[in-house]
Length: 311
Image (cartoon, rainbow, N blue to C red; front, side, top):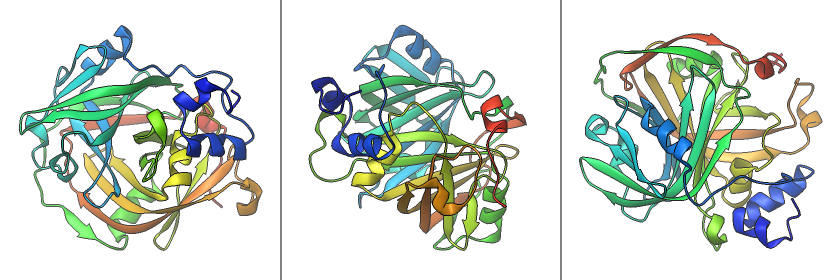
């Protein structure tokens, strides 16, 4: 897609367009809508969990996972989503949401590898319900999503552990992870109608995220070439990362600053990587058993099997 066309400017902000240019070109087209088609509305309504990205009071991106019985997410019309918050009372990310704040939502069915994304703003929120006004809705391909079977489990309701440096438990979770999530924001300054918060999925073979002290390095594989994540990082280098322990429902939530390495060769051979980004941990919290769900399996997608690991 030509970055100078009015369509491109309406769908992507200047950071995304620059990221597309630096990466060698953006998409030929973009199926980004200002409303949710009926199949997306039905998809979200059937999910027992959802990933949410937002910003805190200081403008730092935050990422979390919400869960509830199928139906805890509803779509009253193509321009809105409603989320039941009864099971999310202990989530600090939800507690920090306010009307008119920007959010990004990601729905994934790990049994089918299907995923859809919604970006929007908080229309209303109280202790019972979160209402989202949709500004962007689009699907993503199933690449790099590992298949898992899901079952319910009681929440642990254990206290969160806060830290400013990765501890052994956090390192172990990251070292074995084949999946993580990253929340970003377009930041201050005018970014037009495409401004906002985004949360996206990253997948690879177990251990695809490299750990060097408090710095994480994440390979960036081929995708839809929208560059929503990297485009936000061009404008606002602060980000949040989320890791899920699928075996016990633990959540590891991190905030940090980023640096994009556009030249993949600069970090050596890594199969499938087109570029990398580094994440310097500033703070985080570990929430044991926070999600009342458990997953088994972890079958790698064919695309994941063709990617590399750190030597």
